Figure 1: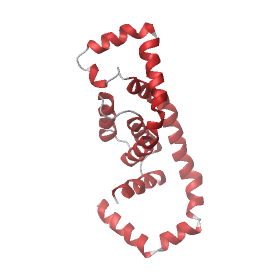
Figure 2 (figure 1 turned 90 degrees about the vertical axis):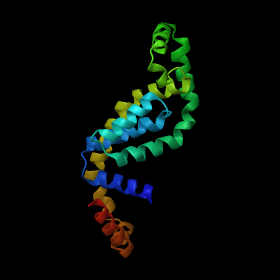
Figure 3 (figure 1 turned 30 degrees about the horizontal axis):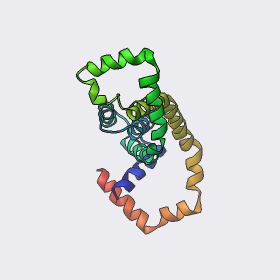
Figure 4 (figure 1 turned 90 degrees about the horizontal axis):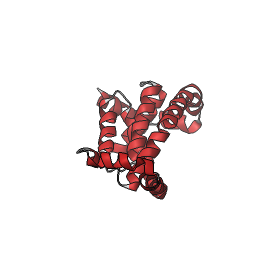
Length: 175
């Protein structure tokens, strides 16, 4: 029931309420959290951004769950990318050594090839994910939602007594 509530809030945010930028930013932070190993300093920072900025939490949780389900499949790619960045590019060795000697930076675990590769991938994908999600929300609100509301299955579900009861309970919970 807990996860259904977040999915329902995500679709509610797609329909209205939060701005497309807020939904896209929440989705982006959730995407970044799901793509990277969580027990790192940057993972904690993205969690704090998701929780304390005015972004859509439901979009963040949906993105985090969806991304986490397939991110482990990309670990070999992340390892290769991290290995290239940490080992093969000799111009960066001085930076890595300096960062490693700072007191806080080992908490980022940047020395791990998978962590480095996933973090760099998340940073590279940040702008495309944000802008594509923002465009998706706008398209959904303008074009897709009116079509979906006309589907017979949607009308049947919305007309059922179970849906009306669930909607009433959800409204009471929102108070």
